[in-house]
Image (tube, rainbow, N blue to C red; front, side, top):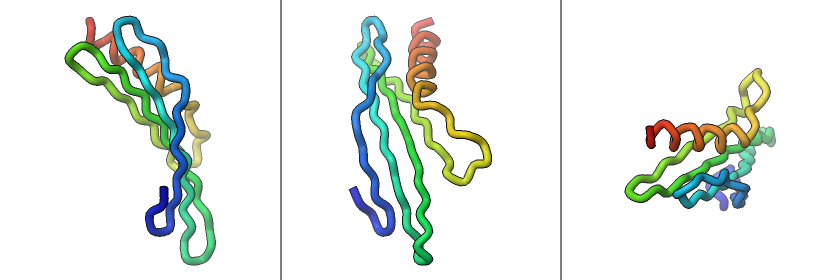
Length: 89
């Protein structure tokens, strides 16, 4: 997809298995080119769990300007499993 100076490519990634829920996960890589030609790459991943009457989702967005190393997209799945577990009590 493209918007102004930004392009992105979305793809399905492995979602964690959760008993009694359907899960899906996706990732998007973005690239923004500014007027000077400088390119900034970003990444976001989202994981969702569909329960009987609820939807749980977790999104992790990587800040391309952060001085810290990016978190692994595996964190998204781990947080989803934890959120569903907490919701179920």
